Length: 148
Image (cartoon, rainbow, N blue to C red; front, side, top):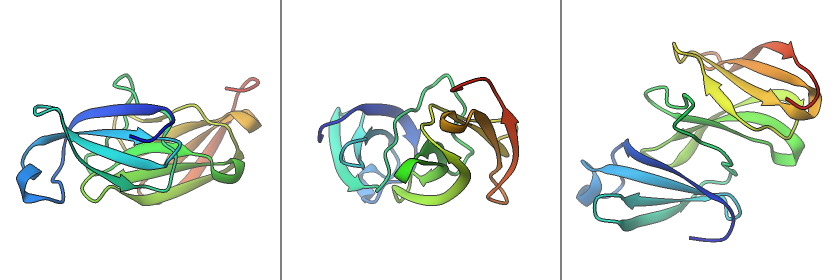
């Protein structure tokens, strides 16, 4: 795996590109520096493949809701602009982006319990962005203290 920080989302069941791994649980390591994803088989402890993603995933945790049943939701801030991103684990591509209109950095994104809305902090502008993931729109800003 290329340099930079890596986070693991293990055992996310999703069909892979190859038939040999299509019915197995897979792990995903998001490599921030190279903006790619290393997919591995945790049972066999073997790398399946590494695919380009084109975004820097800097945080996923089992303590947050990031799976809506179809996509892995997280954030990125290219050119300093915070956006939510939805990653399709089947194709390992960015399926959607939702801009927040605010400057980064950001530190986390969490889906609400009904998995219809995402909240992401926009630390550079001191607010939380409330995003409707169905419509792909920011529906509210919640002002916070400095650098949430």
